Amino acid sequence: MAKNNQCHLLTTIDQHDLPTHRRIRPSLIRETTRQALRLSEQTGSFEVNVIITDDEHIRCLNRNFRQTDSATDVLSFPILDDGTVPVSYPSEHILLGDIVVSAETAARQAAADGVTLEQMAVWLISHGMLHLLGVNHDTEEMRLEMNKREQSILRAMGIPIKVAKLYA
Image 1 (cartoon, rainbow, N blue to C red):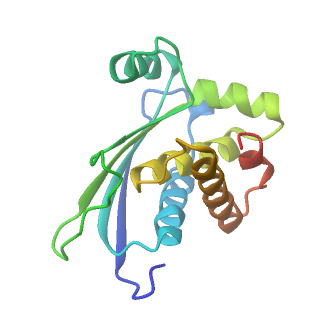
Image 2: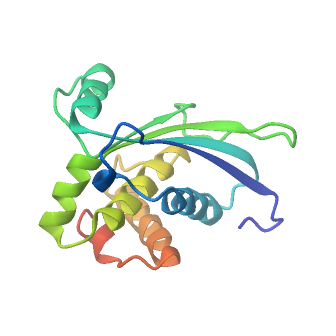
């Protein structure tokens, strides 16, 4: 948590359209977003939306927002494009943005990599959360820094680090 412990995170989760075997435990989603925020040392009151969906929905989003007509594992939609996190006021939550994860793509990646769907989802959500917090991977140096932060989140949650190393 931030040094002065003045940090609060509201995580809204939507995965109601998925079959039960593709859903991720809400407590795990909330803990992932909380750990990412805690390790970023941000202070204030924040909100993030996490949508767990299928390949069809994420493909549509990917096509509309990134001009890539294919499914992907995770998309993030930060509220601010400049990589900054807004200052929060005590009486309001500042919306960081949305994280969208394809449970179908995540399940395929998890099976191929020998990890569970939930372990893969934790990594994908942490990756998306870091984007919302202004961390990117546009250069090799930035990619290595993002991977280091992802590993810190996974370590804090007791998830095997091999999940993050697979995509380093």
